[in-house]
Image (tube, rainbow, N blue to C red):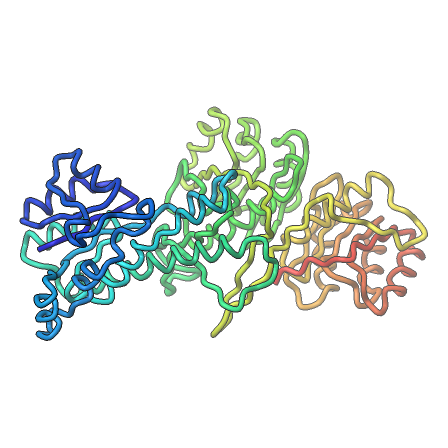
Length: 511
């Protein structure tokens, strides 16, 4: 029995090869893998002992040879195939252990060159993987070091079953598919158009107890995205404390982290059912939390708390008395962790702050039979231009609140309305089929605090009724996209009530 071992990830390699050799397998290898095996005392031959041909072109051509691929592709159940191998003086190859060059890691380096990237596109490896997987009834293909123990155990007890071989082949084809996806993504970078064909590479992080509801099975996958840097939100967050995350936890935590980190200033977001029920910015994160909580103390119960600065002991103390599912921060003061870890049911996550990306990331939305793809709603803070359309210009204080409100409203389900004062949400209306109802909910939630606040609407006002509601509540300034054929009616209503209104020219629908 003959095996070719040629791996980039060498974890568990020498132990596996030692076991394989002990079972009587003849091992052939290339380059660094051969050197590692020989250095560990594993009997190993060079690939040239199969091909009768030296490795050439700086190692670009090693395994691309009929002696290798005939041994992989020959069907053992076809006498004519076996006779042809014998006629040509060739032998079967019964196992291939390959994983590919670290392409994603290479091209994710900030100083990577095109030459570096091209040199890390594996050719011989994928070819051997595909040939072996195509002929899996006769060839064992192993691409994941996690499968080494299973393969050895099965070989010791006799042989791998057809189901075992089929499973390994499936993993092999998925391995090359993810690899090709990464290469395609890298070569597509810088092109703002959408390609005619698109693949998305996902790697399972862990299974979930269930989905949105107990009768729905679920799992959590991480997207392999070239050039993503650390902009992976909670996907790569480190869990410091608490029980496993649920499907709904992950959705809400993502929404909370996205809202908090969308602000440059120290900001706390409290999210419930993916909407920001509390959101506030303040130089002191403990005060930011207190203000966010004050926005809707009822809805905060059972919510997610995210802060875009180190979570301090003072903030942890301020969180006492309210049940939260999760806290998320880029770091924690030791004293804060000590306080939070007294909560048995709190999950504590530490996540990397996002960095600017060269290209706007894509967002995927599943529909039956297809996927909607769009760029993320990722306009930077300094890209917002406020155009005053009323007689009264907003004051400096109102402008600060309008800008805060305009960023807040993009994180709330449409039709979305927020009321803001002193860079904190006072009231919020979300997900309603008409904007008037959202305004009504936001005003009722704010109560008397609505007076003197500013209002943001994620989309234009089709009529002046929302402006009239704002006037009745004592709201002093409004930010909205504009663009309605009845904009003049809204502007007139604002002028008649002394409200300053600004247009942004963009909207923030979040369905």
